[in-house]
View 1 (cartoon, rainbow, N blue to C red):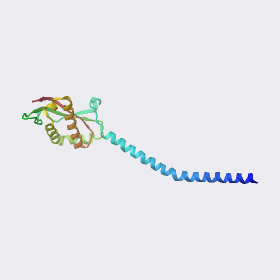
View 2: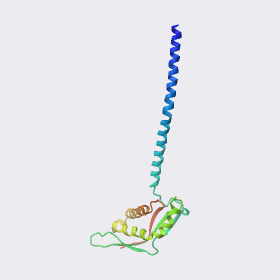
View 3: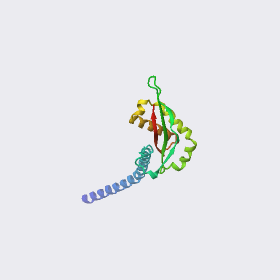
View 4: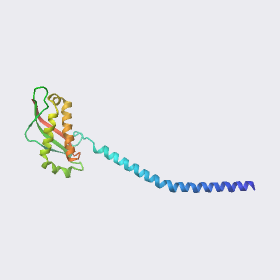
Length: 172
């Protein structure tokens, strides 16, 4: 009889264990799904954030995927930051390179024609931040172009402008 009573007790405990396991599954699975969904949304937002600020190297994008817009037909003269008593100037032609595969290209490319004055103003207000010595160095020229590019991307709130090119450049 003791053996039979022990078997009944063990069976009752097994049954309680199964019931409690089912209750835990019923209550935890929906909460876990919600947590997983939240984690996926956060990961998606982080991935978008990482991609949104991506700087493209125009040399890695195929030529047929780019479009070049000349901002100045003739070299324009820009004043550089004064160092000492000397005034220095830079004459250059400015062009911007656009990524035709960017999602904003179709929408924002027509806006460039109406905002060429703003784009030229960005260029002319950026040059005085740099001295003659800075723009003569390769690193200084790179910083100048990156500074201009960043301001233009902020103006259009888009990364479809991928490079600023300065050509026929002369310094005095």
